[in-house]
Length: 114
Length: 107
Image (cartoon, rainbow over all chains, first blue to last red; front, top):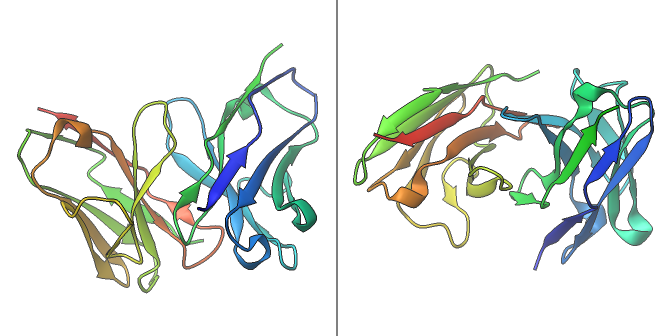
């Protein structure tokens, strides 16, 4: 059974750094693209970016280029989403997902507040 | 970037009705189109992939059609559990883009 299991909720202050994770299982992690989707409170879904763990090819949506970093560690079948300096506007639910097959993680709620 | 325009943005219907949601891509995406259902506080659930293929376990009341730039999701015989927000998503060009969503409400 394919599963994407995300790390737990985070509460951070503006300016802090953060790295959240998504562990894939039940499939060949290096053979499929895996990406991150943002959902701000009460809003729709937005693709942030995506990575191919097999060769680390990474693509970002224009709105998120330079704002976050997506990476993957194929030795532990885990994808990451990272911020170097959080803002209050980064408060949202973040999902990892495989776009071609419709597999989603359970979501990680990130709250940024002073 | 490929833009996805979904309509309507909201829809009121009654139990037992049949409804259709449309999604238009700004350029051709072949059949690389998926549909998702999302209920409040839950992760999106995949309904349709490759424009018209039903995900395993999804009831046949959900159907998708289209190719190129124009796509539809049809839900027949609405039940209370079907009232939710629906999104289309293209995955022809990564990282992909979503439509803005259609909120299906009980009339």
